View 1 (spheres, rainbow, N blue to C red):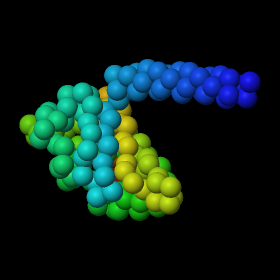
View 2: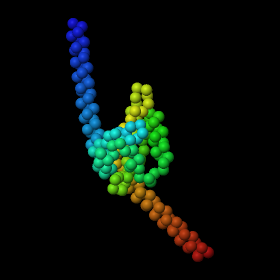
View 3: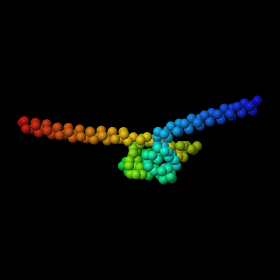
View 4: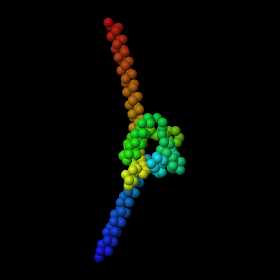
Length: 171
């Protein structure tokens, strides 16, 4: 009777594990269809990339596996961002920020990046998982707004000069 009870519990546990595994696989498929996903070892060397990574970076899997993520660095951002990124994830915390990447063909693309450490039983990072969402449209709108702001200030300055000239002429 005890053996039968243990077997039933084992089968129930096994079914629960299978259910969780299938749900996890479905969630992974959804994420992989929406986001740029990669994994890296503790040095930042790429160990996995999904199809979206290949699409946006324009590198093949074979070209990036084993390469450091610096391969995508645009050179247009302050190094302090990357120092903060590494300090955060190597301490076991999640980092989030906007990164400008450079594709193989020299084109650029902006991403909203979330990088999380996978911690080992000792509590230290064993690898890193990154999910990124392309935000090129957002960055284009920001650039447009900045241009309009600069133009608006220039017009205001010209108007002030004209008003000052007019005022001086009427005195």
